Image (cartoon, rainbow, N blue to C red):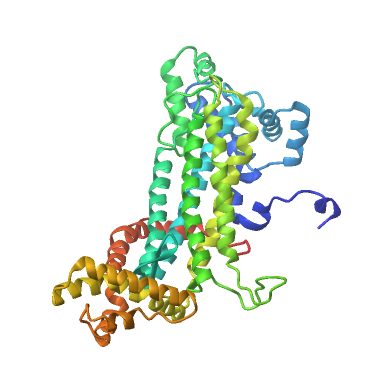
Length: 483
């Protein structure tokens, strides 16, 4: 690395977190390459609709599409103080016969906004692919652990038992809902099209000498050739900034799902029940060699928090657009929208990695469950004592409450849970210790959790994986970032 490079800020998203696939989508080559393709498509469609555009101009444009000199582009921008006009001149340098017709009738938003919509579509598709791959890994985990009882928690206090697999389906369901939301965003995304300076198409109407049909046809042709079935019905100078707010909200929702997953793993790691992967030479702490911190889960939570926070920017931008357009959105959109995509991409790379290598500490799971199982069994004991012994339900309830609180105090002082012995000695229940111990079989306390896992994976998860799994594998390569 050169001295000058060391003196420049390096964005952590490109250096540490975001994948090469997502970085490529928002790269200068990709963005400015689309700009040129938009200019070419606009000129081709105008020619086909009757404007006198020389064939040589179109041919030079086609040949020069990827002949990008970004150093010279920066020099032009320094002169003109306008990024789009800098690239108009740069394209004209490699397509001199087209110099006079590049950007004909268009405004900067024709280039910038239409390009953004294409990039956002690609980025949403990649995000969806990563979500699908994470779902697949969690589904494998849920299937493998569908029947293994574990202590459930509400308020992070011991509650009715569930299974490890059933708990994983809660993470999966959030992500399945995110896929539905991502599908909606992709299906509802439209093109800005050829709408002119303030959205009235006045410049194109002038070019076609008042022929409204040709103006309308131009708008549809450009959208179709850039891969969109429809354009937005009306626009100002820009496409509706509400679209950006919706996309950011969708990304924020996916980030919330990942954060829930990451936070749950951090709690389970503290309980030592389920842990993220830990490499052979990985160091948990520079000062405390024994530590095994859940750093990947923590990083997921850190990144997703940023995505959730970034979602405010496009919402405020949409709320503060003036009339047909104001420019205070430009600098903000350059930062907030790509950063949201790149950040969420990095969190999803981590999530898939963690989900594929979760480690269950079964002995700890059993020990934690057995320590609290006698409390959970008391409802069954209560019903059985009433049914077989004819006891008073309210009297027995009070006895159990007192026995349970006494046993809990013992546990707090470091003693073993003696609730079973207390109830067995209490003649009011009429149940001996062997019968009580038989009641404490963990699988009797998980309800339909295993069946719910099977049904959920079959009816909700498998259709998503069948529909989107192959595409997801094509889009996603080997992670290029540290996980």
